[in-house]
Image (cartoon, rainbow, N blue to C red; front, side, top):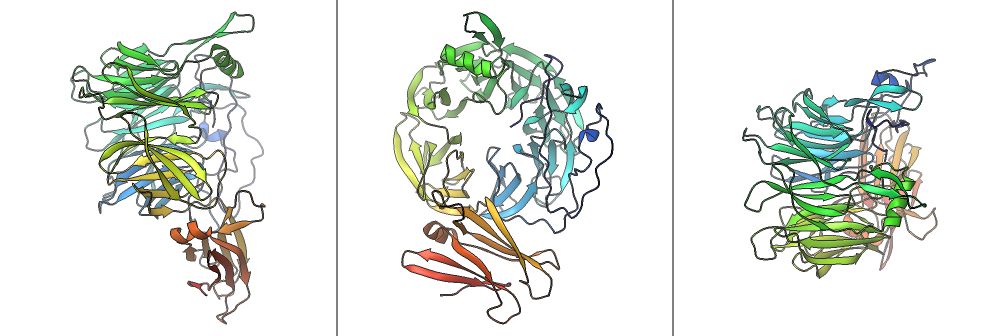
Length: 598
């Protein structure tokens, strides 16, 4: 992940880079013979051969989940009351319902955040806005979630210093997007942070409503209660410099700013002060104790605080991470004494959310997950009223966890903690928020692929189920008992073969997914998804997916081979083997409908 671009204060030299995505491009324009080395026009910074919307040689076909998970899981209600799951990856935005792909929107870079807007197209389905980690193509985009059509886009630019370009106005990476109607037109608008700036954009048009520039990078946006009695909520935002900023949502006026996170003094080998580094604000969570508006705040200095939203007064604070001085100094030495940015070890290393009252005072408690260094992590629950620790478990490894969920399981609130995978089974601990004890472990039968470094995300739903996503597994809806209610398959690699599969004398494409078995040779793989693209029409003719129950007991189809025409219909056929406990059976299909033959 790229580091955030720095604005004029402080002066920082950067090298800009980007990864460009091209899909099945038939041809590309010749390279321009000359380009200007310094320019303020962001469009001229894009290599001349790159295009956000290249002309493809075939229609785009998406079968299966690709790329690492880069956004939180988001849900939205459809017009028929079904729930859709929105998920961002390094490859694009997926909209899935009941295991079926409603829409896939490819992007030039990782989807960092997603927010659900109002229905502006009149198709009874809400639109979506996303932030992508891109400094070439516009990073804030609004899409019709039903058709996938782009409604508008916005390019946040700021004056930066880049290698070989000097001072230029260049797009800054966008971190967060939130939805709030701020101009009273009954259409949700977009609030976003990018670089040092916060923008308010009209939800219909993407036009800028207001802008504010801070003194450092801005991270998460939180909508908090009205503080100035104008009838509109306010916005609280955490900065890389350790400040909390609170804005009037209507016009972007700054109500107050206050440093909350403590700075760190970096001591060198001679025991002298080498630098003083700002430490970030992470979560800001509106909190109700029955008095004035307050918020729970987590920050990089290892502390969780209760802060008055009226002026930033700290009501209580508790140290959750006790840093070892030599390790912290070493961390900042390795970073050339620069503040923590996306991709760094300490980025969002202390997270907080609210859970039900367990102490009997009628006030919610604070659930905290923290990375405390040397591969160790901690979970704890803090009394929301007093800031005292109710319980703590520091003997954990959360290296595979991106998103811990507090969900309703059989009528009771519980914390879901993914543990990782053993053989064909993923395990999730169900933890009692009142005491930190494991109530039980949910075991989920999954596919054969297993690898280190997997990242899991969990999100509760409204009907006693939860969503599980990971970098190497399917997108799953799981019941409280661990049953898979629906799945959308993960595709990590594919094989493409040409041949006559449609019987019209035009060369077609046969595509099958590949799942490499952990511990086996790289040539050993199984397939789960098969489909054919008609060379004449450039459309998908048919597809076949191994049912989930069969997939987890067999691993999929092995030994996939294309064969000459077997049944005399003028089309090549496809064969493979599915292995069951009671033997094997061959799999063969025509170009029209896959047939399973015993």
